[in-house]
Amino acid sequence: MALVLPPFKFKFKPICSSSSSATSQCRPAVILPGLGNNSGDYQKLQLTLKDYGVPTVVAEVSRIDWFRNAAGLVDPNYWRGTLRPRPVLDWYFKRIDKAIREAKELSQGGNLSLIGHSAGGWLARVYMEEFGFSDISLLLTLGTPHLPPPKGLPGVIDQTRGLLYYVEKHCTKAAYTPELKYVCIAGRYIQGARLFGNSNVDVDSALAIEPISEVAIVNETHSTSTPTTFRARIVGQGYKQVCGQADVWGDGVVPEVSAHLEGALNISLDGVYHSPVGSDDASRPWTRSGGQRPRGMLQRRRES
Image (cartoon, rainbow, N blue to C red; front, side, top):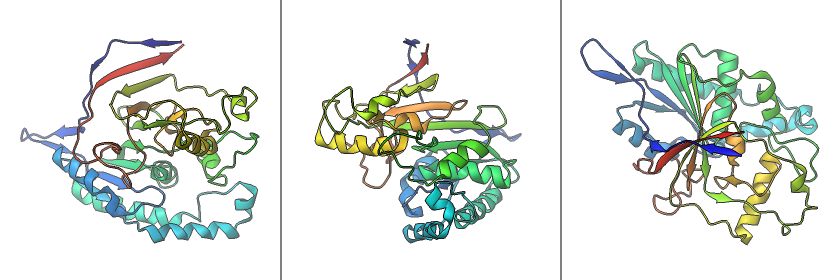
């Protein structure tokens, strides 16, 4: 049962610090690309943040760089499903470190924000755990699959080969505090469907997803309608590999329930697609596609 509190106006604002000269300075943001993305995919996001007065640095990643992950194939842990982020992903952590050093020059001794898209979100968490986060005051994740898939479900294979289990076990739990704020944004672009009808015998029913206790939802107008389509069934199979269940809402790639973390400020954007690649401002917007501001009203849902 959900208790819906009265709606109120929702607007994204960067967190800035006031100086003695009565001007305000926004802390720089480091943008961390997701799996398969390159740095250029985030130009629109950079422009949007620039409009808000937020200077940005994007970690230098090309699409071909992701083939470096193939080094994990020679690690026995890959085949056992117990792969660890290091040393396989050290190349990415070096890119994060370089981008943070550049952002520190812009911050003039102040703090930084990390914005991790998709895998960039949990890679940011590993980086913070391994290399420290004293200069980071905000971790904002966009469509990040934070949670590992449940074990023991037929047909469900951990596509990270153990990496997300490592993150869940070893990385500091999310918290929204004055010193370090965790904000997790999920998209609700399309609802998945089971591959074979609505049979109660389907293995999807073996898992009951526990929702995050508090979620903020921004209502957009682009959500794909819920009647079952072939596309919804295909998308549902992708969701199932991530969270163990097909008939859930998500951004077309990552289920909503996987993109939220207990302890963080969790926000769901209705009608928002997973990636800047393949998105458009009209029918398939990304989280910050173009320069659009989020529309609609914000509701907080408390599960009881």
